[in-house]
Length: 198
View 1 (cartoon, rainbow, N blue to C red):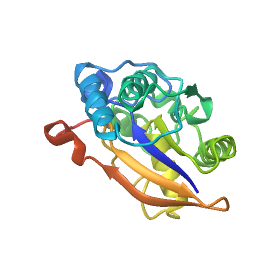
View 2: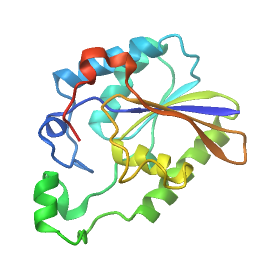
View 3: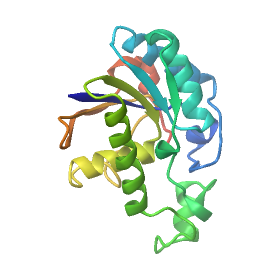
View 4: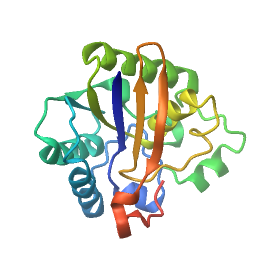
């Protein structure tokens, strides 16, 4: 059985003010770095075989910080796990997006079906490369929510679940299908769980 621990990246300044980041390469802020340390400490006794990360700075920096606590494991960047492209809404607040695009038709935005194909293919490639291992994957709220939506058949995830910075979600595969074990866990964060970010 392959197990993947999904960790959302730490907070950025754009998270803190509610801007949609998408593919914008925004680094962690001081709070985000502290969140990454806390989740790293929480996971330090986990037996991961490798760490995968999105190529965007906020995910890579989170992954590098966490990796110091989990054993300086092989770290792989994969564009399969890059954040959803918000198209012309990138950089806007949710209120600005809704004002500019009231019908939800946003030019250049990556479709759910495209993200689904990309990320589920990425998970299969991880499973094939590390069968029967425990893997840490650091990615993004929009992307992790797509995974949760697909695996729950829409009960949670995209449009329904607000994922907090450095929350933990766990999924497993028996080789035929993936299953959610838990999602959006933030008990490790304590006072750092009090966030207003998107």
